[in-house]
Length: 209
Image 1 (cartoon, rainbow, N blue to C red):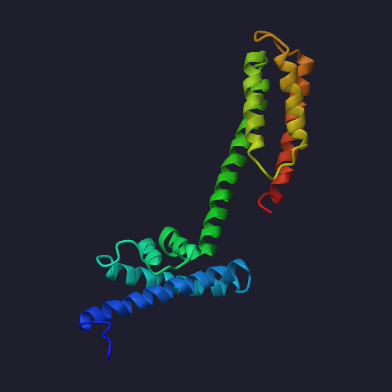
Image 2 (image 1 turned 90 degrees about the vertical axis):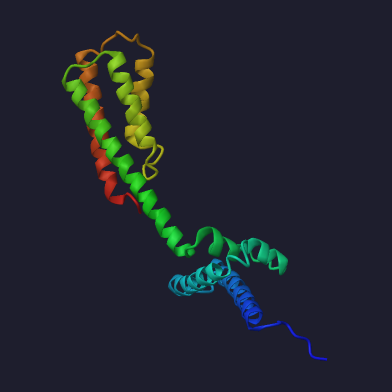
C-alpha cells in the first residue's frame, strides 16, 4: 500500500521546505564545528556561512506562518544543533564578521582611551605651569590620569608613568587639601609628568599589536 506524505501540491511543497530548512541547519552546524576545529579556512568558512545564512533567511521568511519558532522546529525534529541556531537565528552573521566587529569596537574604545590619556597629561602639566599647586587641585588631575592609563591594556603594569603617579598620589594623600607643593616639588612633578608622557607617546606605535 502506497503511503502519501502529502495530500496536495501545497502540502508537498511545505514538506520540501521543511526538509530544506532541516538540511540548512544541519549543514551550518557542521560548518561551525569545522571552523572551530580549524578544519576550514576563515575565508572559505565565511563564504559558505554567508550563503547558508542568506538561504536560511529567505526560507525562514516564507515559512514564518508555518514555523514561527526555529528553535521549536529543531526541538520537534530532535536536532541537536546549538551552534547552527546561534549562527542562523541569534547572530545572523558569520563568526569571522563578528570577530572583525569586536576588534573594530575594541580599537575604537582604545583610541578613545588614548585620546583621554593625552588630554589628562596635558591638563595636568598645564595646571602646574599655571601655578595650580594646591593638593585639592593637583590630586584629582593625577587620579584621573592614572585611571585613564589603567584603561590601556598595551601599557604594562610596571609602566613608569603609572609607578610615578602612584607615588605622587600617595604623597599628596598624606597632605592637607589646602597644602601646596613647593616650587621644587612642582618642578619635579612636572618633570615626572613630562617624562611619563614621552614614554607614553613612545609606546603608541606598538598599540594594537
